[in-house]
Length: 196
Ligand SMILES: Nc1ncnc2c1ncn2[C@@H]1O[C@H](COP(=O)(O)OP(=O)(O)O)[C@@H](O)[C@H]1O
Ligand SMILES: O=C(O)C1=C[C@@H](OP(=O)(O)O)[C@@H](O)[C@H](O)C1
Ligand SMILES: [Mg+2]
Image (cartoon, rainbow, N blue to C red; front, top):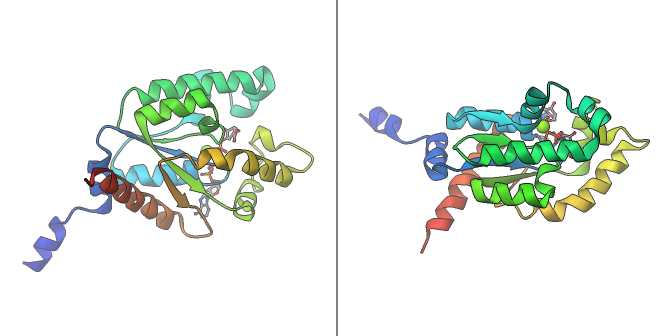
C-alpha cells in the first residue's frame, strides 16, 4: 500500500515539466559549462525534445561551426544563431542548449526572454578550461593563449549571463547531479513566481 502511494508521487522531472508549461528551458553560459551535455540529460528527465542550437546551425548550413566561422566569419554565424533561436522560441516546450555567445546578443536574449526560461550554468575558469582543453572545435579559442581568452570572455560575459532567470553552479560533479539541480531550480523558481 505504502509502495503504491509512494510510486504515485510525481518525479522532479514531472514536476518541472508541469511547472514549465509551454515554455522552452534554455541553457546559457560559457563554453565548457556543460550546456550541451546537461541539456540532453535534463530533456530526458523532463520527457521533452532536446535541441542544441549549434547542432541545428550545423544541420541547416551543412557546415561545422569551425567551417562557418572560417568561411563567413562570426557575424554571419551570429545572424544564423539569432534566426534559429527566434524560430525555436515560437513554440515549445523543449530543452534548448545554446552556444556560449547566444545570450550575449541582445536580440537573441530578448527572444529567449519571450519564449523561454533561461538557466545559466555558471562555472569557474579551471572547470571550464579542463573541459574545453580536451577538444579543439571551438573557433573562438584558437588563440595564442586560449585560457586567457576564456578568462577575458568570462569577464565580459558573466554580468550578462547573470541576467538569466535561474543560475546553477556547474562544477566537478557528476552530470546527473547537475541535471537534477537544474530540475529542482526550475521547480523552485516557478513556485516562487506563483506565490502571492
Ligand atoms: N558535470 C560534468 N562532469 C564531467 N564532464 C562534464 C560535465 N559537464 C560537461 N562535461 C563535459 O565537458 C565537455 C564540455 O561540455 P559541453 O556540454 O560541450 O559544454 P558547452 O555546451 O557548455 O560548451 C564535454 O565533454 C562534456 O561531456
Ligand atoms: O561562446 C561562443 O561564442 C561560442 C560557443 C560555442 O558553443 P558552446 O558554448 O556550446 O561551446 C559555439 O556556439 C561557437 O563556437 C561560439
Ligand atoms: Mg555546446
